Length: 304
Image 1 (cartoon, one colour):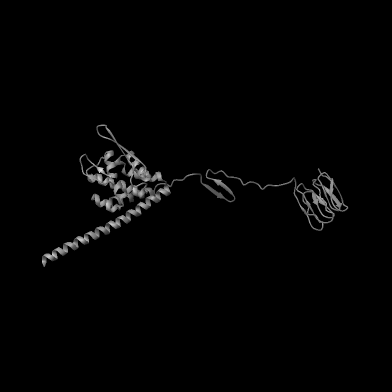
Image 2: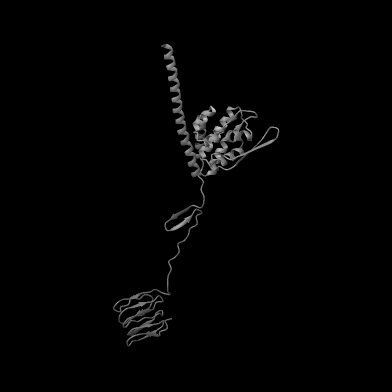
């Protein structure tokens, strides 16, 4: 009976421990997702180059500045990545691979580089070669004759969550979360990038950022003078030195003369012209009459 009780307690402890571990992993995954989304928003607000440079700076001590930049940009775009390292004896090694995950968000790029670093560090590698970095990303052997390992990107492409990948490496997401929070804090203090020329508006006159004002175009005017309209019964509303008299209605033209139509309408296009007439007719600027219909005549005196 006592033995059974001990066995039951051991099973309960294991179950509770597993449950707590899963709950913690879920919480860490949620926190990591939040931080990753924040980093993606900074890429929109402050520019992709700013975020990629921040990520590269955080891992430059481990991967090297050039390799960190290549990883940050290549993982983001999903394009081919070429790495190069120089050994203590001066020999250079290179490695080229294409991420199996395709393009990734900036947050996921940061997580991938952090977990690959943890995998290498756990294996006792603190100054990785180009081939070792490639192995940590896409799988292979870290050392000649060593056991094959799965890469971070390989597991991610197969649908594993970040918490699961960390557990597979025997590491935790805590350090990754801390690193991302610090990176996001640094990004929040980075000035927002602006493109183009800002334009502000004061009143009806737009002004550019350089301080130059753009003047509003004046309203177009027509004719050599002001115009008026002769009303229905032959009364004239004339502006610009023209005077018209006669029956019915007429229109004063833009040059300052009056154009009349109808019975007794009179018009003149000459500035300051004075015209009178009977019948239907149009008096032109030179004073000649153009009449039609009925008995009408018109005469005018063209002004200069």
